[in-house]
Every structure is written in structure tokens, then in C-alpha cells.
Length: 153
Ligand SMILES: [Zn+2]
Image (cartoon, rainbow, N blue to C red; front, side, top):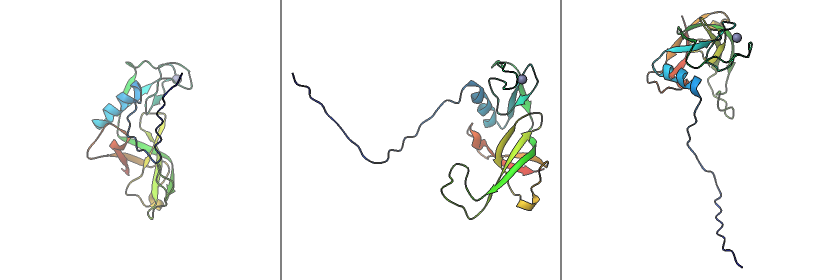
């Protein structure tokens, strides 16, 4: 009794482009972003509005139905907190010569904050509580990069 085996070994780096599905709630969120519209969803029990939308309210532990409780939101918000860093968000291996300003922005009419770059603001111009507005990407793709960042109103 014999068994033939072929063993192939490849050494090195493999680049694999891939897509993944973000789920039905974020899918709807990103479809709206592509049209430069911001939507959230609302818990029917406590009334909190989430951006990005979520399936379950963490406070009430109730499911927010996919086809209900969507809320159209404006492209404006309040700066809740911020940081200034020489590192990119998705690549901390390399310091940049120019600092990035990252803010936590609570969209008007929502109860959560999203993190985005603060654009055209010097560090001493950034103040917690300031009004900000979305600067949309020129060409949208239905992903987080459709929001280029936030600018002062
Ligand atoms: Zn709730």
C-alpha cells in the first residue's frame, strides 16, 4: 500500500485583496454615505440614536428592527474630544512630519460619537464643544472614507 503525496511550499508574503460584508445595518449606513447622507437608528425603548447604526441598544438590550427606526441626520455635530498625533490611525509604524488632528464628533440628533480627522484647524483653534460640519469626499464609494473629515462651521 503506497500513497503519493505532493507537497508544495511557498515562502514569502502574499497580498490578498478581499471584501467583507459589514452586515445589514452598516450596509444601509454606507449606502447612504455614498449619497452624502448621514443616517442613524433609534432605540424604541430609550430613544437613543446611534451613528453608526447598531442592531442592539446596549443600554436596553433590545433589538432595533432593521426596517424601522431609521433617522435622517444632519452633517453637523459637536466636538466631544480630540487628540493630536504624528501617527496615522491605521499605520502607527511611521511618524509623519505633519500632525493629524482626530476628533470624536457627536452628530446633532445622535447620542454617540464618531472619530474623524479635523481639517483645516490649527491645534490652538480646536476647542471641545465647537460646532463642526462634515467635509465629504469628492468621489464617494460607500465606505468610511466618504467622510473626508470635519471642518469648523
Ligand atoms: Zn435603548
